[in-house]
Length: 87
Length: 521
Image (tube, one colour):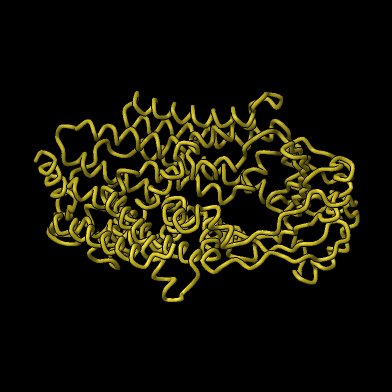
């Protein structure tokens, strides 16, 4: 139970932070908007992800799989940020 | 975890709502009151007169500023509206700021009593008096909890539509549960809007690292997204600021048709040739929190290049901000939002009461947690309105000359609230409910009476001028007094212990059992 709680609150937050980084180069490279604007857009969107993680954390069957998925998302976000990061 | 999605949502709803329920109730209640922030302030400063209909108010303000604010760095004129009835001029030399409240008759200056007014509720509902200590983070966390509670609350209903049209009367718990479901469904859009927009106001502050990495910080980010005006040259040659505003007024009227379109006028460096005037439009025309602005030269009145348009992302955020503050709302819409806010507060309160009474019915021996929840319920749900009424009362009772008057009023609010908590601990639960509700009724009833007793002219003036805001405050106080008195009476006559129910599907019990097992494991 406590694992899920940490996954929801801390894990969700970390995923949101990772996403708020990773989404910026994606938006810039797809010519959706400028870098500064992309920061604002991705920060706003990251809360949606946070919310989704909270909900999922409490209904996944296995908390090991849950943590694996959270780590995977964070890893992908970190990779995107480092590979494509312009800032 | 739980065997299926719905069960886990029920669990999530129960505990996400319970853990921060009192905090959520506090935030929703004070936030709802701040929909009527200027109106409450107007009632709390009865020295202010009806100034909204004053003629030629800009030029009269300018005349005073020419006398008082010689060589100031900034002048500012807050024009009165029906809601505020406050007409303030301000001038500033460096950090040294002065202000005056003007009255309706020529040359008169008002001295309204010192008070935080309705603004106290506005500040309190997102900082909790802890601005330097992470109060805004707590509020953001609470908003997230509320979103989770609303979302999971939707899935607790197996039959969404049937539940919506059910209201069983008779047994308290059933009535409350049905009411909770009903109010919950009505307020889904409102709660989602208010919580999401509340988070969006501090969107960067809560997750700052991306902005720091790419833009160097929140301030730099917002500066590049919505650029301000160029820095003024404060060494430019001297020039006299204009005396007659009508040059500008004509241009403003062309841009913004209609009466009384100006809310605030700011003069930057009025005594320099480079000085400028920024005219802010009243913000009831836009969803955004940023009203339209026009820029003019401060000595010739010629139009100057205005603000560059802000980027879409920044505008989206401002619309969230504006939705949250609802300055755009007309009186009817404002009342609707106010009632929705109250309904949401009642929703949270009823959820807390349900949580407790469901469990008290089941258990034979009370757990310490039950007592804590019971007392906190009383202190929050009836204590907060009581503290609010005491805050209004202190505004009329504390003598006008006292130092730090506004601060003392806030202290009264906080101490009375603490007193409610202590009272709820000392007394049996039902007695505590009844007594606090009766005190609320007494306070709310005596507020208008005391006001009329102190100065009957206030009432008669409001009546003859048909000041619906001042009179509306009276009526609302009478209504609250009636409501809390009725509730107290009803609690007195209600049978002592609710009879245990049998046939109702009890959802929460297996969860508790499992939770207990989980805790032990």
